[in-house]
Amino acid sequence: MTIFKIGFLFLILTFVSLIHSQSNSIVYPVNAEDTKNCCSSLERQYSLPPIYCYAGNDKSVLNVFQTITVDLIIEKTDDFIVYQAADQYLVEEEMLSDETILSLNKIVSYVWKRKYFKLDPFQPSCFSIKTNADFKIIIHSIALDIKRLAMFIVGIFLFGYSARLSHNSLFYYLCGITVGVTASFVIIILLISLGYLGASCMLSLYAIQMLVENLNMILILYYKYILGYIVFSMLASFVVCYRYGPVTNPRSIDLIRWTLQLIGLALVTSCSFHLEAMVLVDILCIILYYTKFSLPFGLLPKNKPKLRLLSEDEYIQQALIETPKALDELRKYCNSPDCDTWKVVNRLHNPKKFAMFMETSAHVSTKSVNEHEKELEDYETEYSEESDNDSLSEEVQKLNYSSDSD
Image 1 (cartoon, one colour):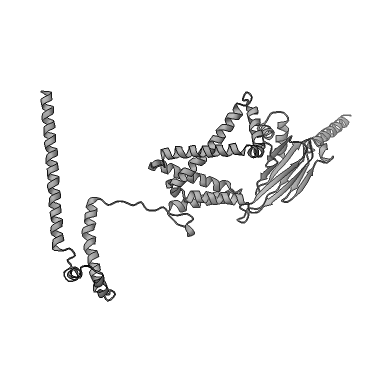
Image 2: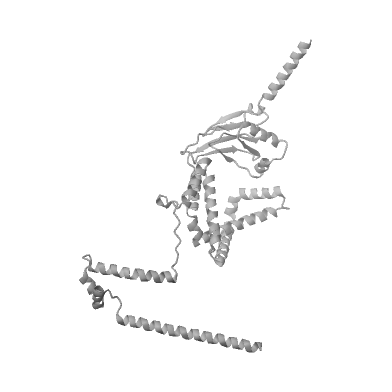
């Protein structure tokens, strides 16, 4: 009898374990360019909708800008929720948790309906669509995504030319006008959504969703008002930028340059799912930029060296050294066979002065020297008179101050 009870209990436990081991949904492996229809009578027997899992590809240089997109075709309803995770168990866990609590994924799916989403082409990923209607999914593979390639090029350009752009006045005005127009639109949308029927959080999100979904119709019906507003905001932004003028403070320019470099590196990093390759590109850009190494075609131009102006003493010293040196080189050239002396003499207004220069190295006439010395004497006389007048005025002020104090 005891053996019979033990055997019966073992059968019950085995039956319960079989029931719990049964999956809550069907799992379908999918690949690029696959099409799946849902939902059949067999699929509806499960408690959860089907889960679709993408295995992922191997990473290589040829598919750096690859993109996998999933198009959802569903009719007669917009009541659906998209779940994405690394494996089927996490997807099931998210769907089961959404049945008991109000999750962020449910709020976002309710407010922002997306009928297409992207998958990581290099990592295994699973997704599922929870809805009461039938639907169809189509998986597309884009080997070279033009948008991601454009992001990569723009990121490299911003990083490489950040120093020039931070000093460019045209770029300053373009950025100021763009930020002014965009910020004004964002502020108006937020004010409308916050003031919409009491401004509850869900109602504000719903208002933003309705505005985005009907954006095409709004642009068609009210394009004149929208165009006028854009022109007005552009003019207002230009006036503000013109009032304050381009940035001239060196530290502010450095901040702008660093910001452009960070934006460029962020664009390069986010333009591909091949994270390792993009991080390597970021590191190479930083090394090439700050080591002043220039690439062919000027992809990463090296910074121009800063010019230092000469002081007055250095200017006089350079003049005393370089002027005789240049005159001596000129005499040697005129005496060389490469110089056609007769042609040079025919073009000169004073050939005698040129001949004297060639024989005695005297390049300034006696008359010019006397005139120059006279100008120096006149300048010294005027300077001494002005200094005497200044000293006399200072003494008068001191006498006046002493008399007032007495």
